[in-house]
Length: 92
Image (cartoon, rainbow, N blue to C red):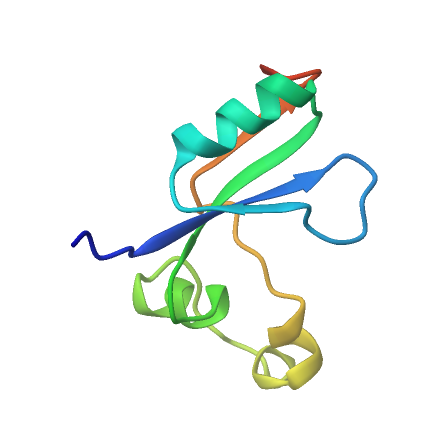
């Protein structure tokens, strides 16, 4: 049995919430292409937050008191995550 260490999340252009979660990039890209979707497909590590993952991998170092606040952590994202942009189902 394959152990999944990442999940691929698709966030459609203009959407407030993500519209798909996939166990592989290939499955996500098939769905994006079939439906001619525009948006961003991003890899997320399993069982951890992007905030903690970024600190662990030294992509981000908290330097201010606000960096430890709930408001900051719950909105934290990182451009270091593997991600791809699509327009009308095609890799942009």
